[in-house]
Length: 284
Figure 1 (spheres, helix red, strand yellow):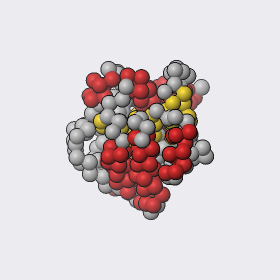
Figure 2 (cartoon, one colour; figure 1 turned 180 degrees about the vertical axis):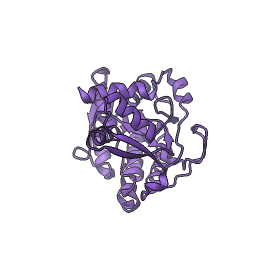
Figure 3 (cartoon, one colour; figure 1 turned 90 degrees about the horizontal axis):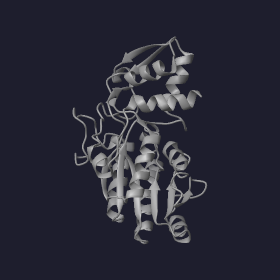
Figure 4 (cartoon, helix red, strand yellow; figure 1 turned 90 degrees about the vertical axis):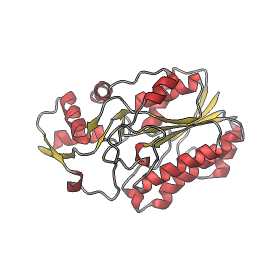
């Protein structure tokens, strides 16, 4: 197949690029904004036709959650409008689309893991634009697989793990929120799940993916420091109210992964197991 990857320079896009070497039966077109402007419908259609694209993995997203509150136009263009253009273009070729979404489509008021058919109720501009993106792609492309994830980190780009490693070495004390609960997701594990879906044939539906287990940002930080051998930084638990942000964050965004595990017969590692792998790669 000829597969178009959007957002190839992001955390997930970079992890998919690494896996392409294992799945050499396909031809990949790795693009970011320099190669393809996904907010331009004509540019997408021309690219898809010219390169005989069979499927699209859309890793591109506007993820600056707080900035989105005052930059709704750009956030909407990338998270809502662009995915619809991709879906419409690939539908004309009877192709498939894998679209990456987020735990932010929920407001986080549940106390048990979110399943795919829970009613979305986003609390932020980012969450609203991602939900609108989901609805658009499902409407415009029959063979659409949506994967919601959260708390993504990797060896690529800027992310929480890299920030906590740096701050742990720079500061004597650090305050981290303890009353927001979710699951860290290693982008390499998500990339493997995506490539498994491509190999086995995508199921048009909504799926959840994160690593196994649960943590608060505080727990996550303590694990990062412990694994990296950082001992000189005292981490203090903070309430969300002590660290106000422009965008509302879900207090509880644990995702139930049963559906994707059963559909594709995959085993998902515990978040600490994957965190060890990532830190080993980062620390060399």
